[in-house]
Image 1 (cartoon, one colour):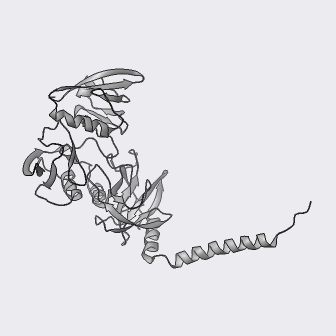
Image 2 (tube, one colour):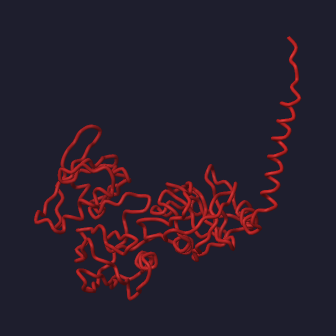
Image 3 (tube, one colour):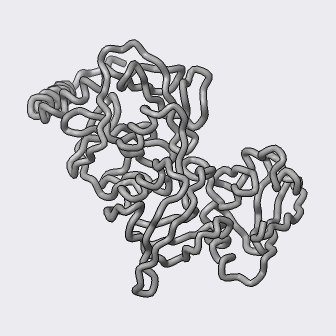
Length: 339
């Protein structure tokens, strides 16, 4: 049977191809010139390290988004999920800590415009734009500078990127509290003994009164052994002089407030590390164990544990119990606030 050609079908196909070509050309010619320039610079600074995307930045360094440290990394940030490798690329992205309201976001395929919604809040929450970013997306200023990058932590803001690139060893300070964008302390680590309470409103950090991003950055990146903060409680301003501690959990890791006893946890409450000669090692905790309950309350995330543990400050009971699962076998661990 002989196939008959349909002239209308052929013309429709040609028309569709022509329309696509015209639309592509029209979009390119009318694209924002700065948008095109930034995409070109982004593409030229990009290369592959193994199967990971790497971007050349300052001082012959390239920044890589990764959930684990690699052998070639000069350094690795286990909180933000970023690594650094050496590169000889002469085209690089400048890293800037100035986050404007209008921004570009995307990857080597395309950049789109968005606007800033919220700044980063310490190691609790990343930058929010009015558009959803994918893992590995970059946030670019209209000057084509790198001002943010999306990891499993969230969008890491430029000033934290600069700190990571310019310091030899990754360290962040903490006073054992979680704060929200309204300056309200939502969770308190009872093992720090600071005198702070859930519901306190953070007013200043080391004399600085500013937005919550700037104050938490001041705290996280400080090198002081003690730091003075002011909070408002029941209408009164209270000043505290509190010893700083190195942050152990948070970011892409879980943060349970139990890290003080010598263990680290994943977001889904599996033990990822047990410190030698720590309380948890003494109590028999092992890598791979999973926390199921805290004081008979079922927990599913590190946030669930923090919410429960934050109430221990007002609890007269000094001893509390964790239900641990190990390959189907469950047992209790006794934890004391007085330790």
